[in-house]
Image 1 (cartoon, rainbow, N blue to C red):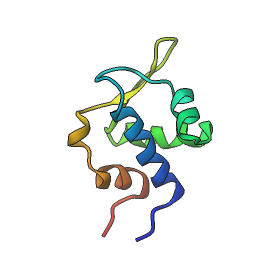
Image 2 (cartoon, helix red, strand yellow; image 1 turned 180 degrees about the vertical axis):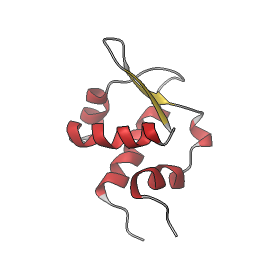
Image 3 (cartoon, one colour; image 1 turned 90 degrees about the horizontal axis):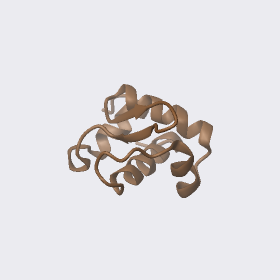
Length: 88
């Protein structure tokens, strides 16, 4: 199995959120800059992660992203399948 760039970026983004205090919302700009990921690409990735229920988002001035559950309850497989689809 080969992990795509999107899968790798998704893992980096989720790991970044896991290092933040529980419940703290983080802007996509901050994650993009810290992990050196193009902002528009990361935004699309985070849409998929949100749709999969791994990440929650809030729009607006005080918006951002946070993990939807405890970091230890999210596996690498969960993240990769949210981006790549079901793995055999």
